[in-house]
Amino acid sequence: SMDVTGENPGREASWKKMSKEELEIQYSPSGWVVRRGAEETLRTYSQIGDEATKRAQATRGSLLHVPYGDRERERLDIYFPEDESEALPFFVFFHGGYWQSGSKDSSAFMVSPLTAQGVAVVVVSYDIAPKGTLDQMVDQVTQSIAFVQKRYPCNEGIYLCGHSAGAHLAAMMLLANWTKHGATPNLKGFFLVSGIYDLEPIMHIPENEALLMTLEDAQRNSPQRCLEVALTQPVDAACPVLVIVGQHDSPEYHRQSREFYQVPSAPALRRGGWKASFEELDDVDHFEIIWNLTQKDYVLTQMILKTIFQES
Ligand SMILES: Nc1ccccc1C(=O)C[C@H](N)C(=O)O
Image (tube, rainbow, N blue to C red):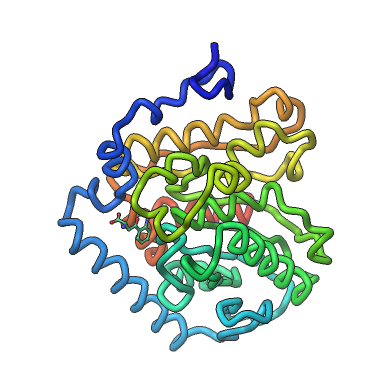
């Protein structure tokens, strides 16, 4: 069976049956929080991000505002563990904010617990909308990772993590053309947290007024869609890809994550694929799931450390 567009045989695009109002609700993460109001949650999110970043800069060795390209926003911050050797695992983080808010300057949530365990953390800024387009953001993220590989060729693995819109950008790296960027990164793992992998529904919500995505833009930048038709295995089959969603993320966010997790079983990828796993984290919303990374004992912090250090 086919859906109304004649695409994705066998899978119904359930969101296409939703009204504009319902789609807007489904894609408003702050509307689904349970412990605080929406406003207070957004305020707390930026407050915790600001504080974690200030603390990281005050307590860790760092290189701040390092240019990875010529544009103003093509800057990243690198935070080091006590051992400032260059043979370290590098954890590279892409912030969320619907591709139109946020920056590296308030997104260093995970620096304390990861650097304490010997992991270097890189927090990346990119040109958010309306200045940047989706294509530019994807290109900038690619460039930032190639930069880390070139600057630290002795790295013990580059681990990509993105939250929300940042998880989309990280997921696009499964399809990146590295030869164009002059370095193939030593990618060892992906942590995709509360992400969006099919951008088509986003065309129909108010956020698209800044993004100005056409159907072609949305499809070209949808890792879900691009991977389903990919002809080659995207990354090393041993590379773990963790698709993670919070219990209190909306049903559409849950659907997006579950379907993306199932991509490796798409016909073209069935042989090979990558090591995908799916985690729904208990009792957290779209924002707590990432701000909890300030805590060394949080289940996601531990999952990241176990993946990097290969314990089972
Ligand atoms: N996903 C995010 C990640 C980080 C910061 C904000 C968002 C939002 O989605 C804000 C949206 N305007 C909301 O009210 O839910």
